[in-house]
Image (cartoon, rainbow over all chains, first blue to last red; front, top):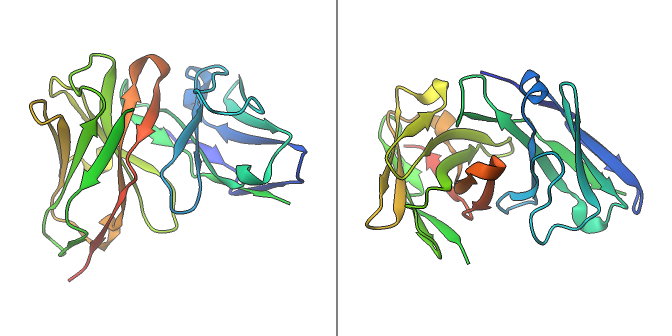
Length: 109
Length: 120
């Protein structure tokens, strides 16, 4: 199976920019999707593909990819962005097999 | 609006079978555009995809659970189900069902999740 590596914790000052990264071999071929999870809630999709936001996701969220690293950037972080963020990509087992990163806890200071 | 709702026992004894159902409303499970998945999250830990199913019955399972897991679909009831056999305390988790949109390669709608505790 594949692995996706995320920093366990990241912090950002209110209104500043933060990049959350995800590393893994599968990201050389496939884009990550990103999920935001607040305590006691289900995950919410915030980014997919090269740089695509689902309806209702603020445009301060953006995505990018380079080599084996996918990134989720929040430009002008808000207090409500404090959450856990998970990347997901395809597992080496093949199509329709998925793996999540370990998650990054984002703190907005 | 699409909604997914998990249902099933919140407590299962060790060595028994964990059974959950996810009921879809606001859409059809027979849609060719989607797969249907189960993701779990042990308390205080991260997300783990454990399996998916297409409405035709094609299934995909995480390798570590392949000997114990069965996912099935009931198109007449617009629901899909998870059976996990021979559970241990390590299977204690919040279990989420989710819709996977093929064209975006992402889980775009999730159920609220249900906590299943394995304990005697």
